[in-house]
Length: 175
Image (cartoon, rainbow, N blue to C red):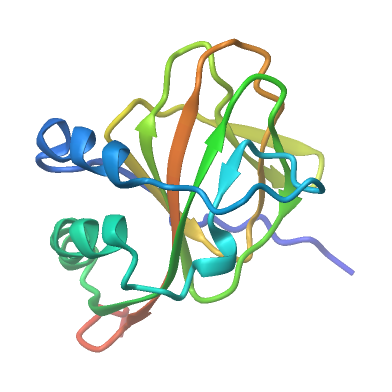
């Protein structure tokens, strides 16, 4: 067997109007009762398909605009968000290695002090740190193994994660 070294499509972009929406999003985030088995201070994954949560209803038009713009720059169309949730990492919180469903995963950094850990991608023995700042969105294929290492700082990292599918109609494939 031969391992093929193939590039993956991983994109980072700034969320347009981030400074305007940030305080509204942070104000609307409300965690359900914490799960004692979870490694995160707050997460609403169990509601990830509920698009009627107040913060989701507020964010979706802004997120859709940003994702559509990004998709068009890559010659894709018809983005369909399958699920969306938020995660808050306080000191000692982490999210171990995992993958997601659907075509792509997005991580939108709402709070990301420099002292908090980056999202990491794993490619066999290689680990790549995805350096991000508040207001960044990073998109990568959902099948890529990734994690958020232990937050060793006393600062809070808050992300919104989402999975989505794309339609490749109109993609400029090679002849």
